[in-house]
Structure formats: structure tokens, C-alpha cells
Amino acid sequence: MQKTLSPAIMSGPPQILGQAMSQTAQILASKPILVIDGSNRFRMDHLAKMAKIMGLKPHQVLGNIFLSRAFTCHQMTELICHRTYTQLKEKHSHHLVLVGLLDTFYDENIPFAEAKRLLKQTIMSIKRISSIAKITIVQPQWHEIAGPRKEFLNILNGQNFTVSQLANQ
Image 1 (cartoon, rainbow, N blue to C red):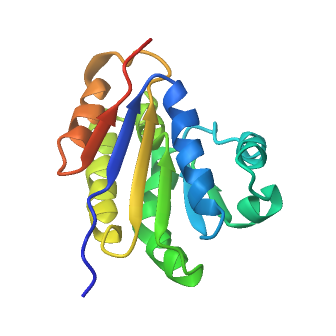
Image 2: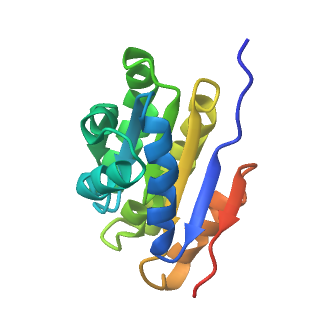
């Protein structure tokens, strides 16, 4: 039986995305990674430049990325709860990067109770997926979240996940 790894959360100012991509580029040199982007800010061109700077072959690095984008919390929940486990197995990947996981849940057009329910469902699936993959959740804080939805970051950080925060500079 494989040991379950604790998902890692990287949160902080937008620069955290660059730091996470640097770490991801090193892994991508030899291993496939699934990326789910909920903020529409995952840039393949930046990753290719980083790979080149690191002396890696950009086409090899980019060939190891399997990218999905979610634009609503319903899409994010669907991807994570119903598709990711199978995709990891099919792609022989043991790495999942979630960029801007919470961004789709901040949408004020979705009733708060529904967004919170979907987030909790998504977190349960993340825990299940962590039995077969190393998970990194990159949650840049693009802007200040107001109202009750700011609770979502606390819900995520309140899990038994490894949390590292980059301070505003």
C-alpha cells in the first residue's frame, strides 16, 4: 500500500506562482505532471523560458504537462472529483499541481453555501488523490477577498496539509 502524502499549499502574493513553476520545471524534465488551472494564469511560455534557463529541453518539459483549466467552481469540482484520479493513472503521473484552486470558488454569482459545499467536496477528493500523487496547491492572492468567501482560504489551510506562505514584499 502506497503512503499517502500530505498535499502542499503554497500561498502568498502573485510571485508565489513563479516560485512554484521553477520547482515544477525541475520535475517536468523527466516526469509527467497534471496541472489544473483555476486562475487562467498558468503560462506555458514562462515555463519554457524557465526550462531553457535551467539547461533543460523546453519541448521535453512542455511535453510532460497535461493541462486542464476550470473557469467555474462546478468545473473545478468536476475535474478534481471525477476525472483527475483516472487521468493520473492513464498518464502514469504521480504529480498534480492545482493553480488558483480557490479562485473559481470566489465567484459571487455562485451562492455562498453552494460554493462552500463544492469546496469541501473538492478537498475530500484532493485527500483521496493524495494516496497516488504528490499534490501542490498554488494559491496566489491576486487581490483581497472580502466577505464570507475569505473563509475558503482558512478552510483549505485548516486541512492537514503542509502550508508554506510567501510574505508580501
